[in-house]
Image (cartoon, rainbow, N blue to C red; front, side, top):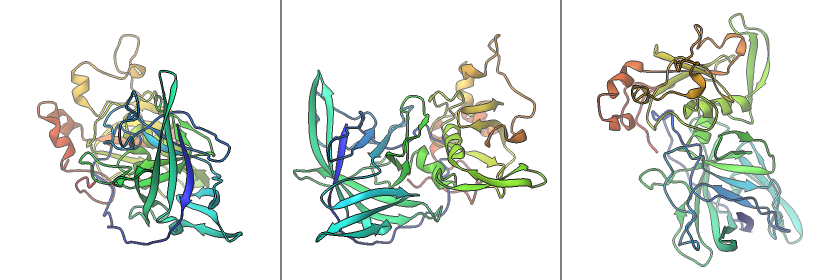
Length: 385
């Protein structure tokens, strides 16, 4: 478990390098970024952060526990800030609106509103612990927001450069890192996600810091911001009977799609770097098709509504296929109009380059993480995380 309190506040501002377009590494099996796991500790004063992931080392916590690469596997990782109200000696009434924090700074007995970029330079005390052989073990850390800046992909999504170190000193280390251990920013999101099933757990008292190189943040940056809304028409073709529609379920459906979690049970059927195309039936569309690739599936918050074929053809060639889409004879189940999003029965359609996937069955899969040649959206470019 992990408790958090505000230790100080400062303000600085730096420009961030712009990112040109959505990453070619379009799907990924990881929901979020690195490191600890455990229940929320609700103390009398501090209201807690939880880091979901695998890196508690025993029999005591060994060194900087908050370090380690993002897992490229079926583990949903994350960092959760249990609030929304932090009661500390300096900052009070912490809330998250979209991806920006708001609160009140207590100074000389007066409450001064602070928000957004005011939190650059703020430091948070972390009391990190785990239970080993029935005994509680704890270490104290400091978390700092080095920078907060608007993302290039979405005007209302802000990125956070977050570092940490032991409270008693030591070098600052990035909270989120890529496979080369290079810093990666995070996006704060309300609620949290079950580590095993991938389900979103609605709890306004929890905030998740989603690492940009994993699915929770990616789906947000692709446009499916879970706090936002869009327009959806009952008659999509004729644009009739239109009204507002929350994007919260679109975001969840996107997380299933990006991880190829066909059965909605948290099991990914993909690896990093498999390019996919996708679209929705919002008006206007957040994502629209740019290829004529093979239709893979329609997606709901609970997994795939229908499945034409899996994007990892190498798994199929080895005799593997999602059990929830096999009939009683063990053959894949399909429907003729999969991909149509008929009557909004699902939220997102995905496609993949089946020819390229077939070719990869005979080759080394290393090229999946390189230039796939085709992607979706605003242009094709190499993964830059």
